[in-house]
Length: 114
Length: 115
Image (cartoon, rainbow over all chains, first blue to last red; front, side, top):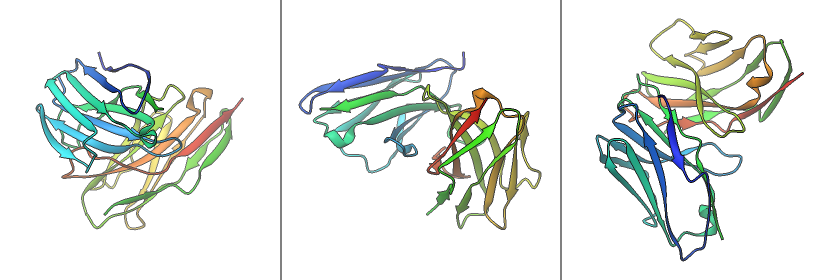
């Protein structure tokens, strides 16, 4: 199993809503990542978890709240988002955070904030 | 800070032909990794090929090969015998050896393979 599964595939939410994005992998990877990709732009790193601990937060606004309940799961909790937060949110995982390991990406959640 | 530049927003190639995608980067580090990722319409980012900067030999992966010129900070991708399934967005990416898999991506090249 070399899959990173993200749910939901599409999400439309209002600016006052609270929602969560989910990411799951069963490859035994100990590093997991959230990336944000705006239309026609490259992905940009948001958060890195290593061994279930947050190791990198790329100055992401607090309306995005990551959570890693166990080594297989990564959530991104969303609250009070703005329309400019509409984007494709990609999750990735790798064996660890060393660069000699390949990062596997999910298919993303396309988020629209209305 | 690292920057990755892809100067070709769009390219096309006839099926079975060869195409080369360009990438240049800027860094002050001496040890790093370079990658080419493919993002088809399915949206999933798929690793195509990886190059360690300390290796002089160019990486190859079946129909995909790179031309890595460290002094020129250039990292081009050559796709031979192009197939319809190669149609996708291609991103060049950089990662520091000490970076936590923190990939810096270029702006991408949209490749269309024409039947």
